[in-house]
Length: 187
Image 1 (cartoon, rainbow, N blue to C red):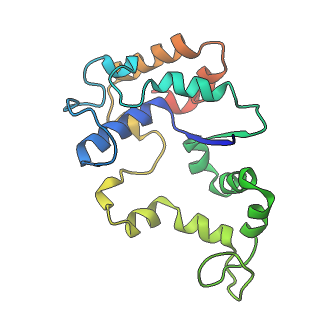
Image 2 (image 1 turned 90 degrees about the horizontal axis):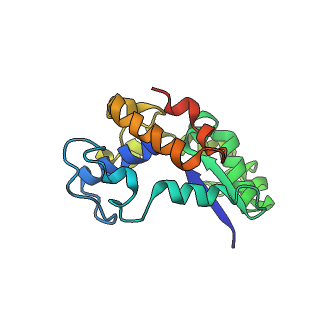
């Protein structure tokens, strides 16, 4: 089985989960007692308070397969910093025919079939998947936050961040994961 996984760092993940909890997203089972902070209480850090299990365990399990030929891992922060490279990497994972399509010109439907438009499919994907474009075209405009890396610092306290850092050290030390988001997780 093939797997393509897009990760985000733990601080962003919890802030996103908290945000979804308070915007009424109906298709995600949410923890309704988080009321004042994404880190209210301590059960969240153990993974026992989450509907789909422990974040740390899931990430570590995926990480163990990072070198497998049928697995590709990419971080959200990578995608923000280098959207062009990230899109090509995703297309490469899906198959070379998709990489070739990225460099084909778009027809009116945006299918990269080599039609008369001067716009390459890759350029169109980059433009239409930007945070600004997605927020302006989406019916759930309030569902979006800021779309920038590191904004979790505006929501979490330093003490909450330190709790996460401690769990990262406890769970991931020696795996390589402890340094994956080192820059993004610095206070």
